[in-house]
Length: 321
Image (cartoon, rainbow, N blue to C red; front, side, top):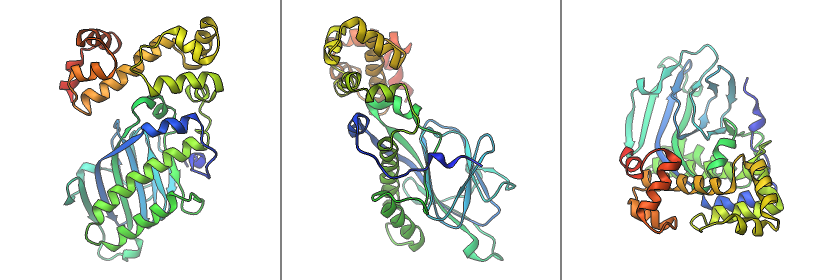
């Protein structure tokens, strides 16, 4: 069985990581409602987007790519921040079929319904599952996704979260009532739950994450990282960053590299180009606008910096979308 240690539990006081979460956005890409009679197995391919599953009726298992199983009861929700290959199955011996092989009926734009039930089987045995493919838009918080566990679970019996639990209860009502507009409401509720789950994980200490999170929570070094992420367009110098930490340049550079694995100036460059890539591909911004927003004096200077960090010109990133 998969370890349930990633289950979300009551929150702790906010810290600098929580402060930076104000930059987090989440956008749902597609949604699906499933009513399935056991045995069933729905396989989801590996993808860059996050995956969210909510069990509104019956039971199921999250099956990881290595075969490990996580039981999901009615009222449980699980978020896979980095996507990854997995399946939702009725049990260990269930045959897994690719999601694309299931016949679906559109309910509204970006929302489909899949029904595969056995007539001779009591409907109380069916599993009712809501699934979403989402884009986590953390913007300047790009290291956070890589530090997250493979899955974040909100369990119905153990969940005492004052904000998430009512959202899941509302999702369960919308899934079972089939009222007009339920598809749209479900989509918005799923996005709110996913953001709340990430925020709760952060406020609980980010599990056992170290490195970047530990550096951010270092009182002196954290001040510098918060400043960099809140104002990446500033023309940062090593002297300015060291002054923000209250140390010499050599001490600051040594502590920064030990905590993040890179030099301060390379960190700033990578942060800027990560933002640039998001704005070019996701938001379809013009190259000159991205250059201006990141504080470059000319489009040519930005293009040189972008190619040096990413290995391709910015125009190519924009077209690749």
